[in-house]
Amino acid sequence: MAQDKNPPTLPIPEDKKERFEKIKAKFIEIYGEEPKFFSRAPGRVNLIGEHIDYCGYSVLPMAVELDIIMAVSPDTQGQISLVNTDPQYQSYNVDVNQIVITKDVPHWYKYVLCGIQGIKEHFQSDTLRGFKAVVDGTVPRSAGLSSSSALVCCSALSMLKANEWTMSKEQLAEVCAKCERFIGTEGGGMDQAISLTAVAGKAKLIEFNPLRTQDVLLPPNAAFVVGNSLAEMNKAATPQFNTRVVECRLAAQVLATSQEGVKWREIRRLGELQEKLVYTLDEMLNLVTSKLHPEPYTKQEVCEILEVTPEELVETSLSANTTHVDSFSLYNRATHVYSEAKRVVQFKAICDQQPGNALEQLGELMNQSHASCRDMYDCSHPDLDTLVEVSKANGAVGSRMTGAGWGGCTVSIVNAEKVSSLLAGVKAGYYQPNPDKFSKVDEALFATTPGGGAAFYIA
Ligand code: ADP
Ligand code: NG1
Ligand code: MG
Image 1 (cartoon, rainbow, N blue to C red):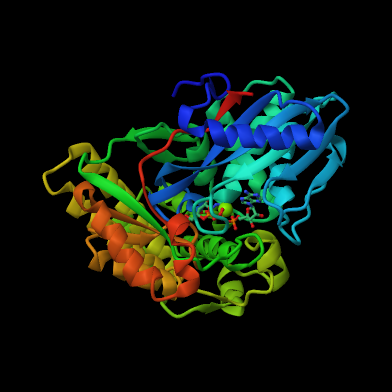
Image 2 (image 1 turned 90 degrees about the vertical axis):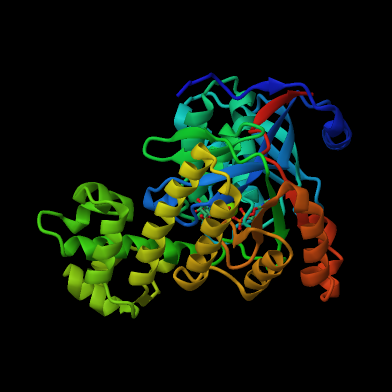
């Protein structure tokens, strides 16, 4: 893969000028000087491949138009000064050498600090510049469109340029995937990779270890509609996300104990176990059926199988906010992961071959993905399930929750000619009956095409 130096510096598009000017005006009002540059990183919608990036499996997202923009000016004194255009977020200042990111409350500025700290650790320089910034975001928060990673990536870009350092988009994606873990979520790297490497007009297949990306050309008659259920969940503030990461790790380790010649302590991901066994995904699904039981495992049972004490289990398999969890679903989680990994391969193959009924085939895979997220991964929400059904009843060929789930958005695939009727039907069927949701429908429901990736803009 080409390792271009630094994401591109682009002219501000005509239709975005007003927003950039507003951010610039705010910057001048706050800091009494003009910003030197803008950084921008988009959110994303994941088309298929949910909750499998952290198991080592490929995913297939595209960037959206919604983004985080920062107006920036380097600070040679090493101060970081952050102001958000949204008044609900308090301003924050810190010396770049004094950054501490605690995992307790995920305050907004900690995501910015994650990006700064990641770049700092990568370059290990004795002389560091800070920066002053005004942050403006349009990605809905905690809605599965990755506002957190857009913020982390945008911040990393700002730190990089403020210090006049260079790094390829791919290197940045690796750094940003790791540094978002400072705040406590154990994600797999999909969000940062697509935000940084997206190409307008194309979805991407993203593979991990090492990070690789391939453009995916979607069928010409395919359009995508995103609907925010408006149920919200912050991933860093709740243990559900990390519990899934841990359940997948335990499933891999428990399965490993059933295989001769495999040391479970060397296995941390379901994908690593497949590699070690040199099995197909179908063979892995059979292994799950024959070696795991569908009922949840108690912590005691897991400890007995792995022959460790509960204290040792914390060391070998658990994470900071999951030490209290005492029941783990291993069969269901592993079944979801291996079947979802298979659906991603099938989705990519359909896009490559473009058969006449590509849209229907892709839609069916998305429907299966939603059912698996809902029933096997327990990461849907009743509002998401309703939104999926309303979308399918109004012309969507396929519909599924997207992102981590437990609330947030759905993505539907629809024939491009039927976008307007789908939007109208979902507006009437899902939003209108609820006055609170209906008041937000204009931001919550939209058609989207694959957007471009992160970039700098001249101030
Ligand atoms: P998601 O990534 O799916 O949107 P997360 O729960 O991972 O959801 O991250 C949401 C958090 O990211 C918010 O609670 C907030 O702290 C931070 N965030 C996102 N966008 C912004 C923004 N524009 N300004 C400030 N903080 C933001
Ligand atoms: P969101 O929905 O943006 O919080 C999270 C993870 C991804 C991936 C998805 C589920 C982070 C930063 N993001 O995304 O890596 O695991 O859930 O597919 O942890
Ligand atoms: Mg997030």
